[in-house]
Image (cartoon, rainbow, N blue to C red; front, side, top):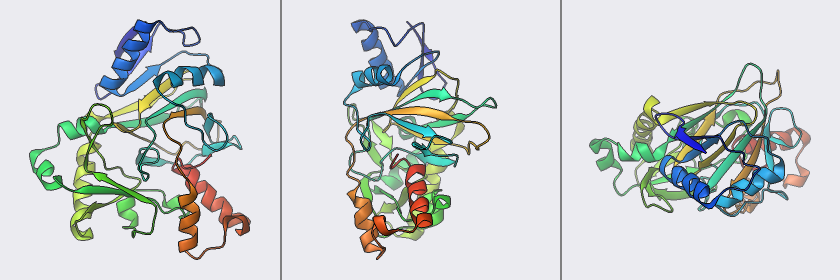
Length: 304
C-alpha cells in the first residue's frame, strides 16, 4: 500500500490497495494516521459494492442512518438521489446541529465524460495560519450556523449575502476557533452556506468580519479540487474540511454513493420551523411547494 499527498493543501492518496480485501492491522493504522494528519483519503481505482463501501467506512466509526438506509446517493438523475445538479457553496454536513457528522465518504459510480469536481477547504490549516489581527478579533466569539428550511433551492448560497436569520431558525453555535473533537486542534468554524453571525457582534460588525474570514479560509493554498474518476473513493473529516461543488448540469448522469459516520440528526427541527412560519403541515403542501422544500433540503445535504 502506497501513500502520498493528494494535494499541497490536504489529503492523502492511497494506491496499490484493493479495499474489497481485508486490511492488515498495520495498514489500517497507517490509514487512520493519514486521515488524522491530512483529513482526507483518496483511494482511486476501486470496484466496491454498497456493502463493501460500508464495510470500509465503518472501520472509522459508527455508520449514520439517513432515512431508513445507511447508503445514499448524490445524483443528478436517480429518483432517490440528493442535491441534483445545483451548485453547493462551502459547508460541512449538518453544521447547523450540535453534532455534525464526523466523517463523510463518496464513491464515484457514474462520472460525466466532461468531468466533474468536488472542492475541499482545509479549515484546520486556515485556523493555524490565521493572521494575528483576525485571531485577536475573533477571540471569544461564537459562530452561528443557521438554515432556512423553507427557502427555495435558489437561495442555498452564501448565507451572509442572503441575510442574517433570527433565533427561531434551526441553528447551532460554536467557538469561531472550534476545538477538533479528537485532537483539540482549532478549526475555523465558519462556512459559506450557513454561517450568518459572529456573536455577540451586531450584524454591521459581524458580516464584514465573516467575509474577511472567508477570504482567508478559501485561499488557493487551503483548497483542493478533486476531479472525479469512476472508482474513486473519498473519505474525509467533516469537521476539519469543508466541501463544495460547481453546478454539474443534467446532460450526463453523475452519481456518487454516500456513506457517513456519526450521529443521525433529529430532523424534527424542520417540522418545528414550519410551525413557526404558520405554514401548513408538510403532508398538506401543494406539489410545487413540497418539491421546492425537498429540493432545498437535498441541496444542503439534509435529506435523501
